[in-house]
Length: 432
Image (cartoon, rainbow, N blue to C red; front, side):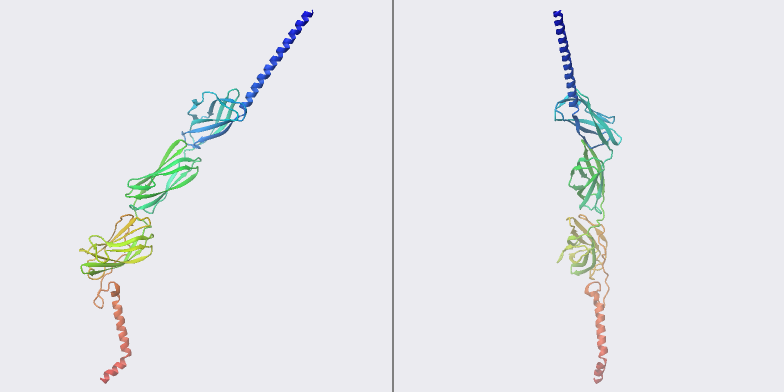
């Protein structure tokens, strides 16, 4: 009986030990599972960036998602994905293995994606699984906009003139919500030189604008094209702005207005004098007066240097020359503007009827340009015709024009004196 009782006791002890072992194993397993679940719950999405900030429809860009492990245990991550029917992942096979994120570490996933139209905001979901726990989810916002940048010529000269340096400004507007990068503006045109040849802008923020200036010199009429290229993310875009370059009257240029032109002969040569007034807006630098072919400058003043002639200012000139054909004597005025561009205008004089009379007859006006010449030539320039004076001279110009007045004054004075002395003169005559 004692043997049976001892055997039963041994069996009871073994059963209790087995039960305790099973209970211990179950508790350890549950603890491990809870620990794994707690570790994965400490992994979260810490940042999301998109490049570009705003996509064009069907444009390929990059979305980068960064996760942070704030726990003390490494967590295995697998199968990262973006869930959306309008966002397509182009590199879906980039993560076929499990990646471990250590405690206190970060891990980034970059997705090459294509955004579908229409314009607007697309809401997607980032999802990634954990080795021993559940999945991690985070919402994404993706913007799509088909609006292109705007560009226009915001400043041009009143008129382009051949070989003259003109300022042209281009305004570029980015109406998009996101910035654009690496802008290049390249001007080109047949017979046109623009300085600088390329302008570069690193960044133009969303809903911002910038002005770009060029100095343009045109040798012929042509189209000046500004090619604008830029990056939206990693995708290159381009647009063009075309400016027709037409030559015309420079409204800001100096204008030479000539008056009181007079001609006198000096043997085989001639002397022409007059007054010139700058009736334009700009100053004329280094103004020189001379004659052109078939006339030839000679004598004392083959060229007459006036120097600077400010706007609304005037000066006299004198040019001596020889010419066998007085029917067309070109009187040339040349000067420079503040930029050093050359201007030239020509006044054609017909002097046949005035060669011996002492003044110049009005002729036809023509204009030519060596660089930036106004097209309207001279204004208000006219000659005087000769009439015989009381003393048989010419009353065309200079002091000779006052001979009749002087003679009349002398006669008047003599008459007054004779009237006052009439009694004295009469007495003298009676005594004789």
